[in-house]
Image (cartoon, rainbow, N blue to C red; front, side, top):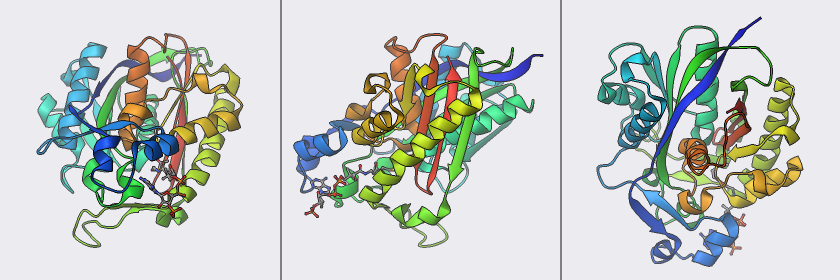
Length: 325
Ligand code: ACO
């Protein structure tokens, strides 16, 4: 019996051109390149130019993904944008991108799961595809996290960056085994009780301002490794594979120590983890597709390999996705 799976037809990435180094940050707040590198692995991050918005980054990543996939905008049934930094409170970034791409049919909407947004987006897109409501979906993770920073708070402003990544997914008939190409499983979770560990202190209904990101870093760190590890095991179990079968772990890029700690807890070599944290920082919902695009472009990820994507973010939200490339 055949089943429908979502296969990645193409992917793309976009980074704003301005590079903000640790040395430059050390001139703004009481920090140092040594502190940031040692505690996080971050050396630099990209920052959107004045007037450059999340929709611009998303649109550029979308154009790259459509071109890479050989798919035209009019073939899309659905655009999903994972973002926590929309241009405006409404309408969604997805509808802005829809208009810029010239897509006049189907639907477009944003989803909000902060750093887990791309994993949540994969779950949403995959479910739309598998139930037959969409055949071709453009999924984008795009963020201008620089706009949520309190640039006087050294505990947060050194961590984040701006960017976007996108994939084009299409329904394909498969055998229904773990040897199939495409998304084998997605696992998503949340625990709203942990709000105070990571949040933004503003919003349209509370302060009528955008607010700034606030975080209890040590607490977030502790939860991250445990939650991500259990989501990875859940994905492997659901797909009937072993964690040791995974060729590449493509994690949300929050902190190199979280990536190393997760690999250690999973008992897999750190050399199987794709890390782009040094040059991207934490780009929230954009970090997983940016890391994926990097590893595909440099040839590490090869057709047929098993990829485990995972993330955790504010909410808390977390999750994983297992993809046969
Ligand atoms: N430069 C220099 N000193 C700093 C800086 C900085 N940028 N930031 C904090 N410090 C100081 C603190 O004030 C503290 O000083 P004190 O001892 O005099 O009080 C000292 O450094 C140690 O601070 P800690 O918070 O204990 O440092 P820690 O080793 O925990 O590292 C960090 C902080 C990097 C935030 C870490 O906890 C972390 O990465 N946590 C995960 C959070 C995360 O990744 N969040 C992203 C969003 S959620 C997600 O994506 C999973």
